[in-house]
Image (cartoon, rainbow, N blue to C red; front, side, top):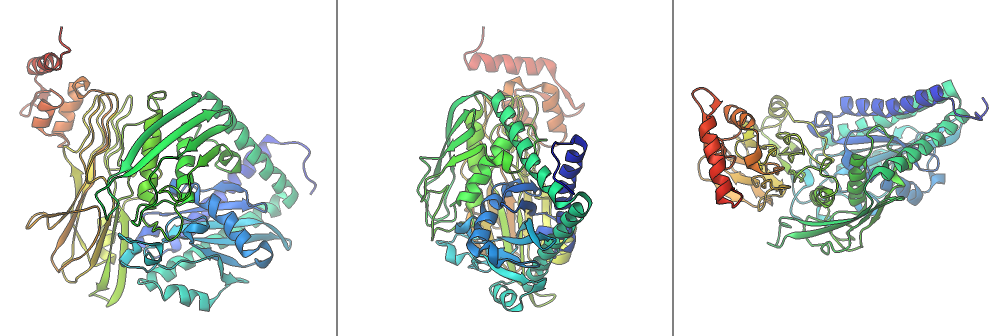
Length: 583
């Protein structure tokens, strides 16, 4: 079949959607084959296809946090290993954070796609493994250097000619605690790439390789044209904001973040000069992690229908000085780099709030909030590891409340159900509920935080908190109040001890670890909130009667579940006079 001389719109859409569906089938294969809850249930992974020039062509939307990770890692890994050294049926494995990756738990598999004995492109997937060795179960903790965080894998072959290389596989698994789960997850990743190869070959069988290549170029050009048009609609100028990660896990000093965003005809330039130097603490983001955050911000500002490929990424320009918390260099630890990355996203949106108030929320949870634990399962005598990230409050928006207990800013992981968690791991979830009165008050309130309590009845696990927001809650906008800060409490109902947000502790049988994540910031003055909305929040148990009265200045009759109109009018009138805004 000859190369087309013009674009047929029907064929274009067929190939565009066929490519996306191929990566979606990769995600289905990975999710259905995986062993760990973190991958099979929480969906902490992403899949993509690159052409022979190592341009990203299509990416499934598993985790937006991986937006820039694959784009940075795959071309570097292939170039480092050598294109000529990767043949049909081979698969590379890599997690090197300083070779284009994120933290060590995110392991990427890269497989070339051959058609008629000619290289055509690459399929890749990245998945967060529940353990990669290192100083604590689940490989999260307040480490001082990257070498304490787990096994570091440069680009090496895991599969040759379609067969797993047993020596490499054994070498990697020997560093890892949860060998059965991890082994199963690796095989699921191999299955995902195999599925991708088959689907892409089927498309070429139907369309022809020349036609397929032609439309790949057109798809990238299409994304570029549409992104350029969307960027032209953005308010051009220079916008700045600063923020911080509350603590680094070893000192009381916040990690300062500074973001300058320049919007012009060429896209968005993200200048992160001024962010703190990297620390010997788990708060350092790699270049790829930070780039991923910048790409996410631009993606949020344009039409969501625009394909996420090389045509889009050309409009993301970033300056992150080496040796800082946004572009760390060895041997800086990076396990908590996502905490810094997602907080930086919050800062970027804050910078845009003055010119795009209709597009930007108040402060959000803006932390990954890892919960990681492990030990010997007394039921099986097998070493187990478990990891999940907690949801929290989203910020209020210009015309709506922030959602309660959701993942934010690039996190798209799903809930780990209590039933599945308790069936597969020796833990009991004794509390799982919203944190009432955790909202940042506002005309549109922030979402509520989440409480989740873990109880360990019959063994002594190691438990790691790798989170943040335990000193200050998310900021409000335009008169809105900050959300309630997070807290992490050992034995909350018996002998409570409030822990810092980055710590590993050894638990005794019967002890409980309680997470209470932060609420989102409020948007607009709380005294302007619709009284009926306040009454509804009180009735649903989200806001207390006292908070409704003192902060929102709304009197709620709990016998009739109605607003006391006269008392509310008086409260709000008195509030205006006290603040100097009276007549």
